[in-house]
Image (cartoon, rainbow, N blue to C red; front, side):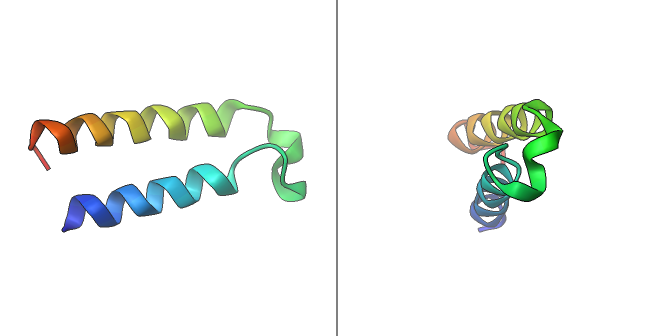
Amino acid sequence: MLGTILLIVLILLLIGAFPSWPHSRSWGYGPTGGLGVVLIVVIVLLVAGVI
């Protein structure tokens, strides 16, 4: 249950940090890349059954 909630929150953060939005246009791809890596790690942990 906690893993699913964490996954949904990370996906929403990833969408919010995407550089096409006006508030994040000057950030570049840094936050999106960082959140993408965290999202991949969480997905791997969910598949492995750790979370």
